[in-house]
Amino acid sequence: MMATEEIRKILSTIPDPEIPVISLEELGMIRDVEVQENAIKITVTPTYSGCPAVGQIRDDIRTLLESKGYKNVEVELSYTPAWTTKMMTPGTLQKLKNYGIAPPQHCCGNELCVSGKCSKVICPQCNSRNTDLISEFGSTACKALYKCNDCYEPFEYFKPLV
Image (tube, rainbow, N blue to C red; front, top):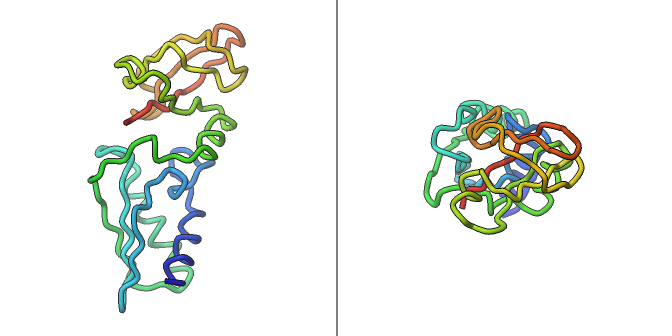
């Protein structure tokens, strides 16, 4: 049991390759840590099935654990249950906002909100709700590009997946 806690603590230091201010653990991607007799199995759920960072994530986990003396590290992908933005902690949402990305809002649950076109997206710079969708896709498929009509700053919105 102690090794599992130690490994989780180590894994909590691995940043998301696309948003380096939050860790894989904070995103809720680390599903399970299993310490076997002569191997370690880490189960990871990607944020979506086509995530281009999966290879990097696997490499980062293996490299870090091996550098800490753990051998035979296996990283397994699991797509069920599917990852959702509700797996993010409140602290993770605040880190996204502080980084300039509007965190996912689960405000109304209507089709527009879930698709990333929510009319209530709050600007992470000035907290205004006077924002407009520029593009359904930002730097990654899981984010949309918005602009604030009050502070005039463009920003990304992490689309909610529920």
